[in-house]
Length: 243
Image (cartoon, rainbow, N blue to C red):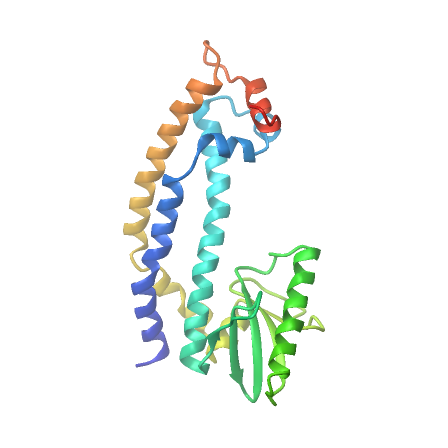
């Protein structure tokens, strides 16, 4: 069985977990917590003047970020699976390292990220420290092969992959690195659409229910008797500990 066929079977068997996570996130959202987390001044400046406008705006911003994280975690598992098929790669037990594999006489420790712009200066420093520790553990365990570090990003582009301490491989380069296939980054698109329409229909039904619930709750809790939004109450909710 060829690699693409095995990937298609893996995706078909496992993509449902991502869609279940999306729906679960919807059912566990809390309007008050969302309002506390978001910037009320932004929504006032955007001239959002109805409960539904505000609810849809804060829900969309939150869910977009949450889905990016959830799908990034799912892609990480797919990448580990593919590396296991091709290079006998395994899930790493080292802190901050997701994958380890041997390729062309070199042992690689790999940290898998969703996209190329995931880090700030402190998180990047932590990543480099994790690479150094993982390489030290490998070398002091009696292994003779060279050990190199890879920051692998599932999508995007990196024009300068050599980061001195490690290589940063994004998109095409990353998927080719773990599979040996220069076209895998394109081949993945088809299987990832498995049951997408059907699953998204389920998601949208739950999404619209959530919007309706939150709109009613917002109107009851954060609107004045004439229907106008009580921005003072929202700002206090967002900024005071005792509200």
